Length: 177
Image (cartoon, rainbow, N blue to C red; front, side):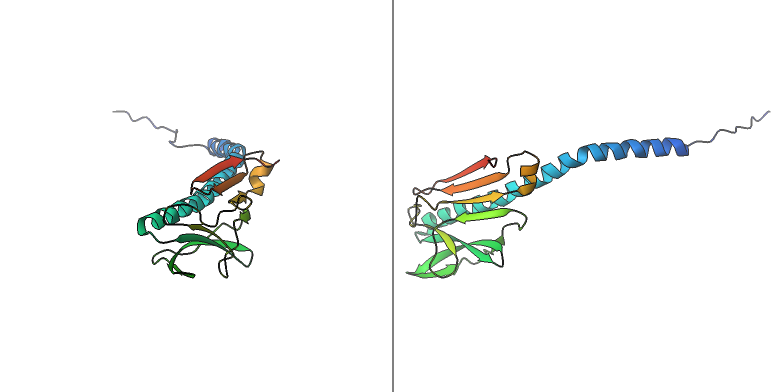
């Protein structure tokens, strides 16, 4: 029997490894702006949808329990918080058990254009037991979230949530002018 001595080795050469890493690096460089754009869009959408669902939940609770409910918006140290309260006695508002204050992401420019609330919170939307907005004001009925990053990418950078007298809640995506 003769044995043949083989000098070939299995595996990749250094050049092949560097070439594959270089190609992966180029893909990352090309896709990075798109990935960042997607993440920013997702964060903006999530923040706006969270506010929208909180407004809808407060309306549902007001109709279900036949007690006024409100979504309060409070500005604390340049951060906006929102939460649901119910009116147990006339003029006495208490947070619903199990509901916590949520913070709107600090990376967005926020404009809360709802009527002023007496005391705390700063602004509020009050839903009556019929689901109507009892403190409706045609000039103060929305909240706007704006992403400066999306504006620089030329993407829709505004999310506007409007609340109408009948209790309907409207969600709009748009671009800054």
